Figure 1 (cartoon, rainbow, N blue to C red):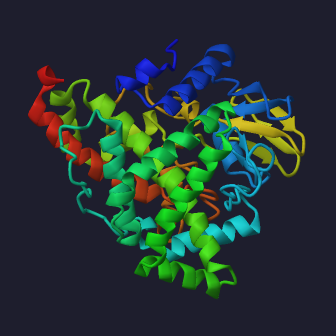
Figure 2: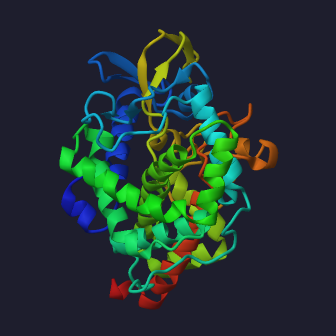
Length: 400
C-alpha cells in the first residue's frame, strides 16, 4: 500500500489529500468488498458510523435528502468546537438540504454565468501569469497559479496575479484539517481571514461582485456576507479542489508525455473526464448526518437501517472504481469510456446533472445535490492542462 509521505508529494506524483483518500478507499474495498459497499468507521463522536464507498452506496447517500450534513463540519474539521470563536468566522452552511443552503446555492448559480454548462470561459485558453512556463507542469505552485488566475478571470473578470501567493498560502493552511483534524493555530486562522479579505476587497468592487451582492439583497440576504461566503467557497473548492485535480492529471501525463499528449489532443474533454474519475478533487459528502432514519440498501441486496442523528461518510475514490459500473480494469486511465459520465466526482452523475433544466448545477430531482462548480472546474482543468501539455510535448520524456 502506498504511504502518503512528503517525499512522494514533493516528487509530484500525487497530491497529498488525494493520496490519503485513495488509501482509505482501497483499504475498505480490500476488507469489505464492493458487494457490501459500506464499511464501519469511527465518527467524530467516537461512535461507529457507516462509510459508503461503492457506487451504489455513495449514490444512495448523496441523492437522499435524509442524508444531510452537519452545518459545522468541513470533512474532519468541526468548525463550531475546534476553531477559536471569532477568528476567520466560517460563513458557509454545509447542511445540504437546509433551505438556507439551497438558497445560497441558487444564488451562486443564478448570479455567476461561469457556472453554466457553456458559461463564461467556454472555449477560452487558460490565464497564464508572468513567470509561468508551459514546461512547469510538475511544479504545483505554478499549476495552482494558472488555475487561480483562470478561475477568478472566468468567474469575476478579475486579475488576482498579485494575490496568487496568498492563495497558495491559504490552501496550505486549510489542507491538513480536511483529513487529520489537525487544527490550524489561531495565528494561521487569522492569516486565512486576512487573505480572504484581501481577495474579497478586489472582487467586491468588480462588476460581477457588485451584481452578486445586489442579487443577494434582492433575495433578502446580506450582500457583503454572501460575497464573503462565496470567497471562502472559491478558495477552498474552486481553487484548492481544481488545483489538486489538475496537478494529479498532469502528474499522470508527465509519466509519458509523448503518448499522453497525443491522447489529450485527440479528445481533451474525454481526457479530463477520465482524470476527474481517477483523481477526484473533493472528498464527497463526507461526513453526512442523517436527519431521519435512513434505510441504506447494500449492493448485495441487504438493507441496513441507519438511525436518525448518525454521522456517516462517503468516498468518491471507491465509488469511481466500482467494477459494477466501470469497465475493467477500473484503475486504468482510459479516456473515452462509455460510462465516463457516471463518475461521482461532482457528487451527482454528470448525466443526471444534464437532466436538470439547462444542465443547471443548482439541483433538480434528477440531480439533487451536484457541485455548483462542476462545469467551471472541468472547463478550467481542460484549459490549464492544455497549456502545460504543450510544454510537456516539447520537452519529451527524456527531459523529465
